[in-house]
Length: 134
Image (cartoon, rainbow, N blue to C red; front, side, top):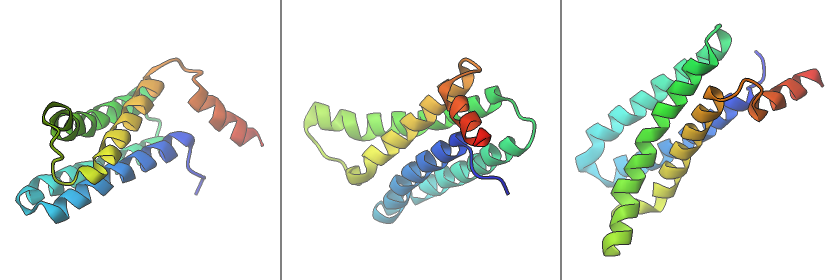
């Protein structure tokens, strides 16, 4: 088995960050459990697809679109569900302790998607090439 690429490592760290918030929400908000289970299942399936796509001849565009669209959910969810209520009303909603992980993980996924959709010789690919040459 080959070592994980930089893309894969960034993807896994971002997904772990988002999942931390989802698990806390699942535990502390019983009324949202069904939604949180669906979100975690989507992230598990997307993770499997992303990691498997590295083994196949999948294009960077497909991996980039997957990361980009996957990251939009947690980023917008944290913004609307946690950050805006805090800014507008000064209200700290439940499970806001890990909302920053949800927002940050989503932002990492969005940026990974943008990097993969960007220029072919992007820094993320150069780092992998340098590591493989050593």
